[in-house]
Length: 107
Image (cartoon, rainbow, N blue to C red; front, side):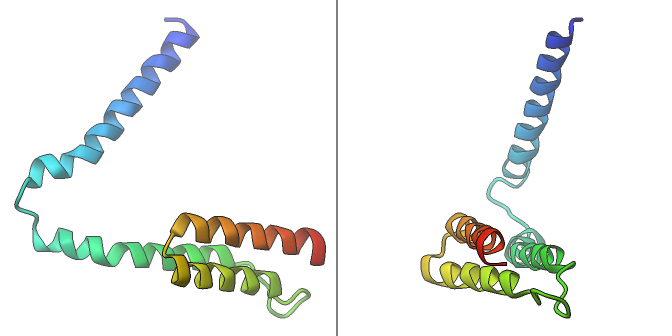
């Protein structure tokens, strides 16, 4: 098997596994979704966002210059945009842009 064929087979297998894993809950539960699955669907997204925030801010030094100011401004922009627009993609992209502009021009 050539390298290109091997790569194509790997991509096809990964795509099939991804599709199967995405469709499996719909196939298994049909009209009968258990309560714990509904609970996890409500609780996990905010928990994951919280973990991502902690992960992103874990190495920010609030005791040395620039004292975490760019991170706080960018995080505030994300929070404000999310509260206003309710669009995660816009909030994250704008927060990233604010942070990068601050780091490249101000700090």
